[in-house]
Amino acid sequence: MPRAVGLAACEDVHAPHDVPVVTTAVIDGYALDSASTRMAGRPGAVEIQVDRRPPSPVIPGTAVRVMAGSLLPEGTDCVLPPDLLNADGDIVLFSPVKRWAGARLAGSDYGRGEVLV
Image (cartoon, rainbow, N blue to C red):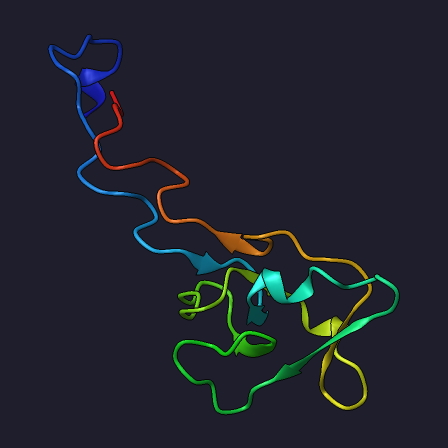
């Protein structure tokens, strides 16, 4: 298509679907519901148990292992790095986690129907 460079489009080209299509993990780590962390740091830490046999949806107050690029499991809205694990294998937090931290949202590059050209 080198001959098309510099030419004008005669009509708008719309995105046929969201890109990315689904919400995914940006990092290897642990997916959980950010609402489970809202009391972290008031007055102490919050411990989140890592569920080794992940249910669907994920139970609030627990986390499940995910790999970068994988679909965020139902019931989760953030991903935390593995360095937050304590010696018992639980996640220890001293401050709340923002919703969608460590995640790439569906449609974040462009949404269905958005004008591309």
